[in-house]
Picture 1 (cartoon, rainbow, N blue to C red):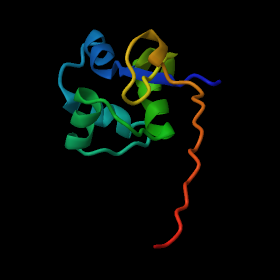
Picture 2 (tube, one colour):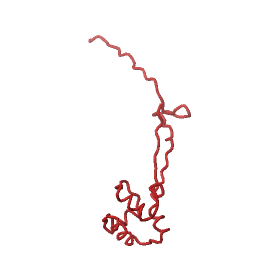
Picture 3 (cartoon, one colour):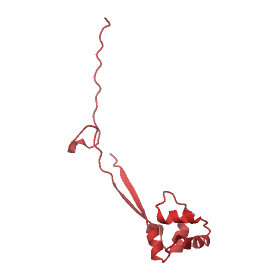
Picture 4 (cartoon, rainbow, N blue to C red):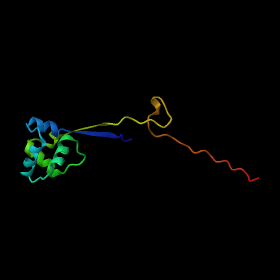
Length: 113
């Protein structure tokens, strides 16, 4: 049986930008523009202060180049096995999800009156 894996990641751009002495997001716009990436001030702010769900590879490559880091420095990933799920209505240690044998009950037909 395959176990489900929980995948998480941590976006470290804000931390890395701060270590480079860039404390305002407006400093990133011209550096990205030098690398052919044009983003608005609000897009850069969201990129630095938030955790993006999607990121284009050209933007990632430009960030890595201007900050002199690798993608692994910007994105720290973690994967671990998900905890087992309990069967509905079951309790205790034997209630973990797994193949459960369910058998149908035979129907009883009654003659019409």
